[in-house]
Every structure is written in structure tokens, then in C-alpha cells.
Length: 215
Image 1: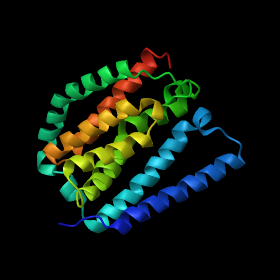
Image 2: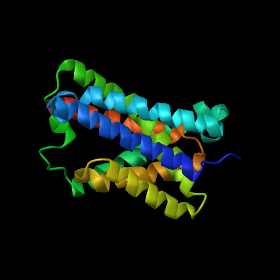
Image 3: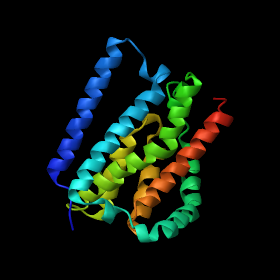
């Protein structure tokens, strides 16, 4: 079976750093606060850029067919819906134990966005974000690490990286989210499972922001 090479990971990281460097220059030159005004646009650009890179790399290695089990799409989708309450309750308990108090948290920043930016942010959070992040973290990172270490260790390392990629204020919750998504992915061997769970989780988070949070 085709596998990712270390150079694939290095190429991906290099291109991500290049994008971060370029986008930072553009916005700093315009003296614009990314989080407060253009969060939706920047998120959309970054996820499209990252998804494009991942698809190019995975196509070259012919990996998508092994990451997605097309013959089990409906079955695994329904299975994801069945196990989602386990994930949701676990995250809810952790959220109560580790509440978010940071005034700079993304939920607060969303309130400052205009309607067009909010729409873009919702599209990214529910659709583009989960697909891209799961291809990167469960697809590339986790499957790459499994080539060199035990599944349990690969899950922990992948989840730590995933959690650090998000807000530090939500680190415990995101860490648990990633561990559970990795575990369910390992059971079904279909990236559709963590993508579905990720999307459902983000959907509920956004609904709480737009209703209870007054966004």
C-alpha cells in the first residue's frame, strides 16, 4: 500500500509556513486585524489553500481510496451519528470542568464580524474546516505516525498537535475531541467518520454561539 513519505510532510509544512508568512505580510502592510474584521475570508483562503496541497500530495501517493471506504459511506455515516452522543457528552463534561474565559476567544470575535464574514466563517467551520483538518491530522499526520509507532502513541501525538493548532483556552476539550475522533477512525478506517463527527461538533458549537452567545 502506498504511504506518505517524510518529504511529503516536509513539503506540506514548508508550504504552510510560506502561506502564513505571505498572509501576515499582506495584512500587516494594510494594518488590518485579521481576527476582528476578516476572520471568515482569511479562514476560507487558508483552508482552500491547505486542502489543495493535501489533495495534490495524496493524489500523487494514491491514498484517498485507502482513507475513504466508498462502499461503506452510508453505513459509516449512520454509525457516526450513533456514536456522536458519546463524543458530545464527553466534551460537554470537559467543557464544564474547563470553561473558556478568554475574552479573545474566537466566539467573541465572531460578534464583531459583518454578515458576509459570518457566512464565510460558518461555511468554513461546518464544511471546509472539518474536511481539511481531518485530511491533515487524521489522514496525513496520524497515518504517517502509525508507520513508526504504536497506534496509541500515534493517537496521543496527533491529538496533541491537533489541540495545539486550536486555541489554548480550549486545549483539554479539543484534545479529547481529537482522541475520540482518532479512536472512532481507527475502528471504522474511514475518514468520513471523523469528518462527520467534526462537522457535527462545530455545528453545535456555532449554534450555541449564535443563540446562547448572542452572536
